[in-house]
Length: 210
Image (cartoon, rainbow, N blue to C red; front, side, top):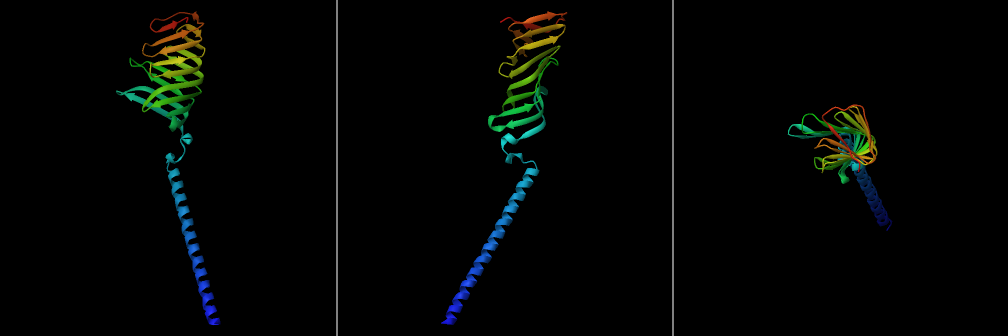
């Protein structure tokens, strides 16, 4: 009887010992698997696989983007920093400089500002909104304002904020402005004031009164 109880106890101890060994082995495999997966994750991040990060975290320093057509630049964007919002198909930029290259000769309409937002449609830039200390340079003229919006649909740069224009011996100010890049025409509207110190021929500035 005692011999039977002793055998039963030994069997239970053997089973318990085996269970402990199995648990330890499974735990060791689990730890090794977690370590391996973590090492692979860190390696992917260090190799620049930014797709693993949320879209809002994708920041690019010294951003630059160019649209070419027929071997010529159509537009170019440079910025100190860019943040790509994939879900919204937009790029938020800091200290942007946006240049549009006119089809004839070497004309350029260049905008710069403190911040901006670019709305994309595939490879096209449908809209660009710049704010803060805006400068628009168009041939011999420099426009200063607080906000400017480029619209691809009608090829214009519009400022709904008060503007001042200087260049070619001419100084103007107005409540709003439109730059028609196809017509190469700058139009000021609303309370326009003009100071003329001497004009050169060529480009047209329209001081509208509406």
